[in-house]
Length: 471
Image (spheres, rainbow, N blue to C red):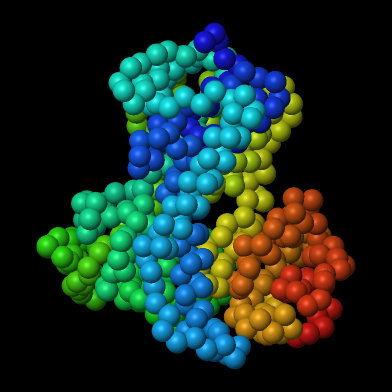
């Protein structure tokens, strides 16, 4: 192999997308990744596909359907008795979904003439990378440009060391072979809430311990508070201000010692999941050899184009600043490839949406009122409840609301926050509007089909313009 135009380190949603786009632009490209599946076969797709977004959404969807049998279908006049969970079949379906998508990624890489290399990469200079294959053999690859897309891994805590059986991280919690009777989760962030929802719907008694006093700090307060109430009503025992001090593992259970503002408490669970966040996967990459600078949080410093302080090295995704989201990584990968090929590109992190796939879903883009207050930005805020939507009422999905924040002087959309069914889909319209720097008035004058859930955005925008109809 001669010198490559581009070598991408990491085949997650940022890395493989970057590699494909670089190849489409005529650059000789290779993508290296160390991930292997349970059979030892190279498994592109990163954490997102192999142990994150996709398997978790498969289980979320399956568990949601089961929960609907008891909680939602009777109100529609549909009654089913004797329904039970076949967890083995559910897990098999999840694995099949993942395997199918892995095959798809491999096919896309081949189709676009991207060389896929299985192995562990380590920088040995600004233009050279040593790759050690699974059999231990090493070779050096030269590249004019290098893109670091190594992703992230779960944060470990001393108070709850993992044993891969009773105490697991998020990957382990996606692979349970039976539903725990009592499940403990440390961390009430996106991952903890989604995993808690899965196993609670399937019959587990779920207790979530969160050290922070505030629930979902990145989320607009009214929406976060309502979401907390709804999730607790669904059976999730979410205990805020609860710091885990120690754990002790027995033969079949885990004892957790945690404290709140008042005193220490004990909790006994059958399984414990540590879901306190993720950290960049950079330790074995050899950044020092290439002279790459890190920020105070230990992430690679980059520009809006993904450039590091080393001219020919780019970095994208979870190993850089900003939210750790697959779609952010993919977009950064596209931008990096196009910039390397001589085109213009930049990512507007102001318009990156976030989603929590609970029921109801929580989604948002842009600023919260708290952020705008701290920044001294004048704004006005209007909301619209799903209860006033005809489609939501007809579907039995009337829990939720949309809140729009717009600049007080020029009406530009500054943030849109959604709690409700299909919030992950509804927020896309808000992202598009903000990308074009639309005003609330623009959204109010956009015709929305009736009856649809998207009318909640339209009505919130009408309210923002002082022309509310259905509230």
